[in-house]
Image 1 (spheres, rainbow, N blue to C red):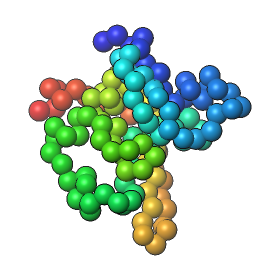
Image 2 (image 1 turned 45 degrees about the vertical axis):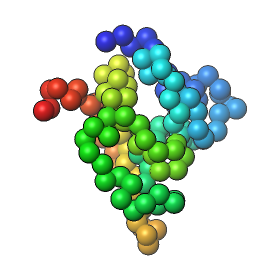
Image 3 (image 1 turned 120 degrees about the horizontal axis):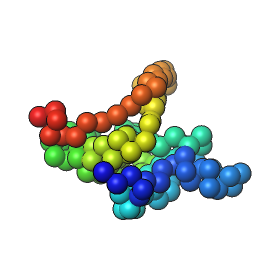
Length: 123
């Protein structure tokens, strides 16, 4: 696996310095560009479910659909298992899950080590 073509939200934040702000940016995975939503502190949003105009069953998909990205970064979005595999096998990542219900109750969970196996290993 050639990891030289990886550029993520943290890299963008570091490159832009004080000019960096949260928003949609282009990152590179395996030298391919992908649009993602980068948070203020360099975290990358890999999943967002917001119910902002898509059907309620928008995320009810088959396994193959989850291999590739779908949706719109900054709105409802899934980054794709193949992309997560490349990122997490080329660099060390942490995972933070932020959830908010319809009553505005918020919860956050954090894992220091986050890595995705290839789909051949788990089938």
